[in-house]
Image (cartoon, rainbow, N blue to C red):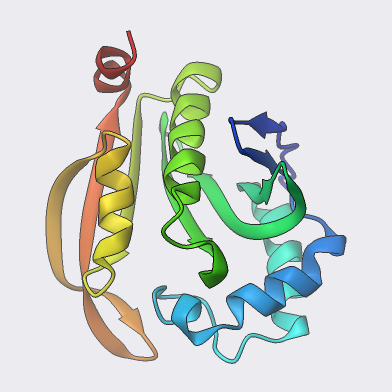
Length: 182
């Protein structure tokens, strides 16, 4: 078991903390919305209680740094953002999703910006990457707003229910982050 203890991160409007069993209802409710699930390559739909408990077990065992996204003004999970280290490297991949009710309010941009800061400044990582399915350009706009740079499109690079989708890759190096924030 590679359990990693996630720190609590805070932004102006958000608290990012480790998800827990008390979040299961919110996870099922938000991830169960097809508008969320079908924007990802791995989230099952329908999303059930056993999917949420299995996912929580998985992130504990695999050592992912996964954060529940919570509004400071209204406690309760509204989404998730993860920092998944690459084996033997000083880099990681970021993945995220947000409940539909919270779209288009800048919350994910704020959460991603803080996870980038944490990855580079606190963890000392040298490179962070993220990707999205080509049919989800809003995710690409989130990445762009945080300073991440377009890298490539891999035709058929992601599969959802056996159907190939183009994978759009973004990345950012630590020195680029520092140049943006000095």
